[in-house]
Length: 332
Image (cartoon, rainbow, N blue to C red; front, top):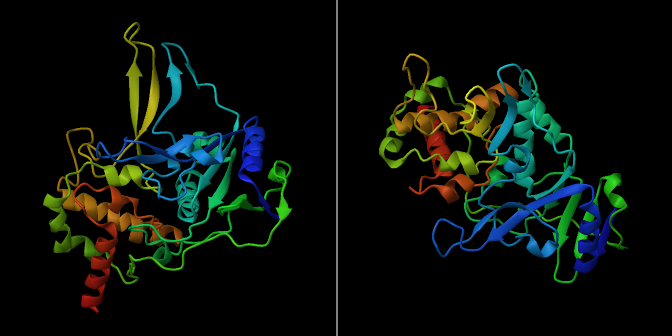
């Protein structure tokens, strides 16, 4: 069903949805960015369409609505453990096409990669997606090169005009919330990005020994910011927190982890791998455009370009992919 309705009517529908759903969307947070005069755009719970940031790309992905940065898995005492009460309210998340493709990658890791993760599945079973169309490409995006600029995998597709909100509602459960006039339209998607990459299809394991990674030994400062803004990075670390009032009681948490940060590869006995920052860049890059594809048949990177946006050292992941391609071409 494709309809058009006013913003006031759309907000009325959101109000009704809030009785059953928590609604998340990218929100601009004034003066919370990297510098004192810049904004931070990240996912927050919203109540009206006016709160949603449509004009700029979010700095952080919607990943944290499904995978919290910090999540308590269970509480423990000397004798027993107990899982925390779970939120049963459904989720409605506004996001871009590349981020919907990113959810497919997270599903692959948490639901189709051996034992499924019950905490992620609980969130995944409750979520529906609202696709925000992209009228034009944002800086550093290369979604077209990665084939993630368009998707049909959404419950509602949204196109915003100056006069009205146009909705392509595919989920029958959501039809009842929206009333408007039938309209014919297409949800926007970009067909070209300024940034283009060519993912090499002839990579071999030998590329891991290339000198190209040494460039990143000094350039990368191992802050991990690229991992935390990435919609497809799924690694986490475990933390056992012991309470001060009774050190036998506590909680186990999982916390987002970064393969770029010191300590990520630390093992019992004092062993540690990939001590050079360039080796960590190699590990991440090949995981995104080589290992994952070899195992599951499609690339992990979705070309959102957030890693390029966020890097304080101006390291470009898209440039790194193209360097890999140049390396492959030279070996032919």
